[in-house]
Amino acid sequence: MENYTNVDKNMIVNETIGDMEVEWHDVRTAPFSIHGLYQPETEPFFHRLPMEVAEATSPGVDKLHRECAGGRVRFSTDSPYIAVRAKYRAVGRSSHLTLVSTTGFDLYIDGEFGSRYVKEFRMPYDMVDSYEQVVELEGEIYRSYTVNMPVHACVESMEIGLKPGAKVGPARGYRDIEPVVIYGSSIVHGTAASRPGNIYPAMLSRMLNVDIRNLGFSGQAKGEKAIAEWMATLPMSVFVCDYDYNAPTVEHLEATHYPLYETIREKNPTLPYIMITRPNYWTLITQQPEVLKRRDVVMTSYLRARQNGDENVYFIDGMSFFNGEHQYEYTLDGVHPDDAGFLRMAEGIGAVIRHILEKRADKK
Image (cartoon, rainbow, N blue to C red; front, side):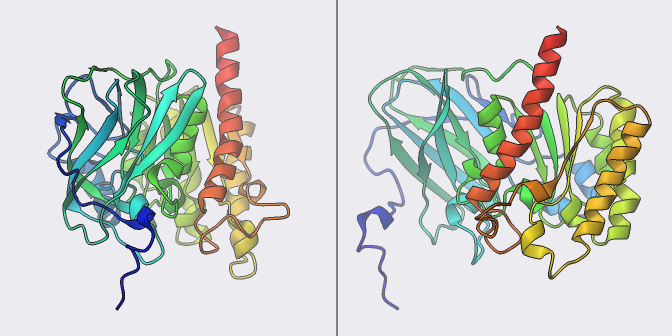
């Protein structure tokens, strides 16, 4: 079979950074900060749940929580280049997903007026369990950076490479509130984004300058009691419930959706709680007419909570995300949002979270 990757220079990937001078820094050490993962400074590899919680939830969650979806490394530096060196316990590959998303990293500059994408750290296709890659920057300017971690890979170790002697310090701070916690399906997990920074939780983090905990588990978020009880103990400013798609049946969703809310609410009586229905109504309604029944289950949970006097519960109708002239262009496969779909979701959910945070600020 012919190899076309050398025809276009933009498709060529070097396996190492070559002879470039690099000083390597373990991201588990200060001044680097790691976000979105469970005790990342001390665990032997990066993951998202306590092991005992993952095991008690389900075999699927036990496997998927080891993937680093939503993990971020943040720092500041004046190095004219930034390198990443990563070692993996498991590498994600799929015929319909990009390798940059499943197994790669991408880089953002964080400034006063928001964050902007710089470049991805691209790996060779046949990479097995480790690689290193460098991104060159615009001069030696002291700036704050975020490196987003892979969506579907288990990372054992990660280092940031900088020019020897470069200044390195803490990242620009997030808004001074507890993290936003998002629980849900492969849509929360970020399965079909083109790169890690384009999953909707990552977009929300940048839009609102807030820390995010991504608790999405592809095909495995089913509202189990074990994970619900653990999530209820987390420090958080907002909780987003977005697991409609993973409930195996309408009956299962009905049996778990309101109890999950009750579990979170019991320990967090005033926490803003957002309930969301699946976004891909238009691409699925002809094949899965139960979409409307599922929507009714989530709406019923919301109305029940409101009728019981809860003024801190919110409902977002997934039917509102992918509509208009291009309603069929927001998914990869009719199910999973593509980058445009994730942006629509982030804008819709972000508007509600922004409203919640503004209300909170007005009360102070």
